[in-house]
Image 1: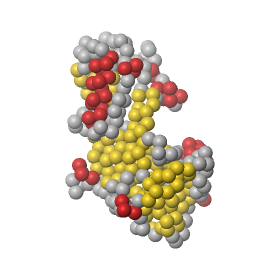
Image 2: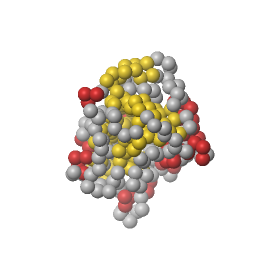
Image 3: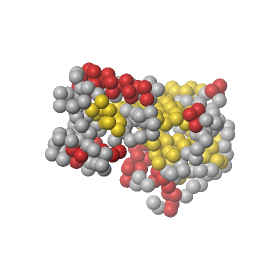
Image 4: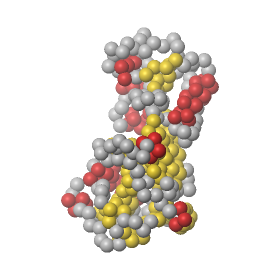
Length: 304
């Protein structure tokens, strides 16, 4: 199977490379000898009007994400002081190793955090699944079809046992991030009732304040900023925009984004159910090196 058919990951440039920078013609990048500039690809982009800049950036992002992400940048995100735009884009498309039978997809209730419910389509299967049972939650691993290389991608779903258990699960993960790596089932076992919802989500946010709260402050300082990237001009970061998209259906996933021994024990009993009919945490991971590509939460499948 061709890698392009089963798993596709692309960045803003046509060949695998670090993030792309769009710069005005009057701004010179630092020499390649600079450790910072050596890993950046410079492009000529004449900053004449905010509208032109926004159109240029949005077209590049839309093209490289196969139309999944549109309008990542708005006109108010560019000003007369803008000198540089750095864009880093991930596009992922994976087909399940075992597709779901679309004829078995049925509509059922998905229970929300506020106690109400919505009707959404659920995929089901009678096949064995990679499921692990832990204290207060279950974990499902859905492997993607592999290409010709050694990469091995999977989607993981962390599902709380209680329909109102999502806040507790998120608190546990926040307090102990290593939980995500320790509780990963890798072997298929028989399961009872098995249902997961189809969903399509899109999310956008300006993340500079979040990064500052996490301690990433140097790029935003007017004095220090990112001056090593270019010559003769002081630069700093004013805004960082993030937008992501993910769709999960019977074929697979399409996505883009311009401690105690007791809780570690897996105890799967015969015909254990896995019914993801309430909020859960999910992520896509490359299993051979343990890198998480995308992570998110499903609160309401109808809100995209």
